[in-house]
Amino acid sequence: MTEPRILEPQCEWTSDDVGDAEVWTEHLTAAELEELDAALRHALERSDDVLDLTKDDFPLPTLGARLTDVERELIDGRGFVRIRGIDRSAYSQDEMEVVYWGIGTHLGSPWAQNKDGHVLGDVIDHGRKADDPTARGYQLGGVALPFHCDGADLVGLLCLDNGLSGGLSAVANSVRIHNQLVRDRPDLAAALYEPFPYDFRGEQPEGGKGFYEVPVFTEWDGRLFVRCIPPYIWASQRHDDAPRLTDVQREALKAVEEMADDPTNHVKMDLRPGDIQLINNFHVLHGRTAYEDDREHGKVRHLKRLWLETDMFETRPPYFANRNHWEANRSASRMRAGSA
Image (cartoon, rainbow, N blue to C red):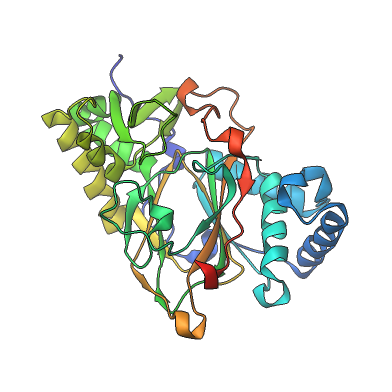
């Protein structure tokens, strides 16, 4: 391959650049909230099952244009946003899910997120343990999650409840990490352009290998595409048939982890009930701090997740096309905090 080069410098930021939360918080106006409510009522006349609802069923004649601007910022700018203003107490969980789904359809096409085909997922304590080799991050309760990517263009999180304490969301600028490595350690940057093995967490195609291979960094049509899930890369080594990580690959991966953890390269945000976080999965790594639930008093951290395919990329690397084997089982997870 050619030598790695600086890509999309306009998308680089440091924590100083985004230290003011107002920079990346979109406050919905009273008129936009009324429009959301009207769209919800319109959609519910069609169906209360999100799988039946499309963008046309959730009309947003004015807010839709603002969401297009948000999507453009996600792809060509900062790469993350928090939407604030929806009154969680005004809606049931079912209604919140429809509102969230409707907003999502104005940003992209929902993708399946797991072997159950969930296009609307639940980030909540599923009772899984961190040492379970088939557990995935969205199923783990309480523990902090390290910086990582998810499996689609855009990742959305809707906060239904933020639990008792903790659970701050963290976002790190992977464009800056890439470009700093190109500037300072081009050898490590080059290593990250080679394929890395990722553990499938037991959700591989039937009869398939327990891992897949994707580069951490990819340049495509002048854009940077990043896929980095360090826990899954390290876990891939449990499979005897997975490629062994080389010394330079290990050093490069640790460098990405350390740079994301550097406070210069990330910012933390609180997600209150009703808030929606959206990120560009290829330009932003995300994680969370540890948190505490209080099930006895109904304070259980519960987020709804969307994986979305944007149409703002004219082309993309073929391994980032939506061809995952989970699509055949498309469904919507409808967990309730009391049953998790």
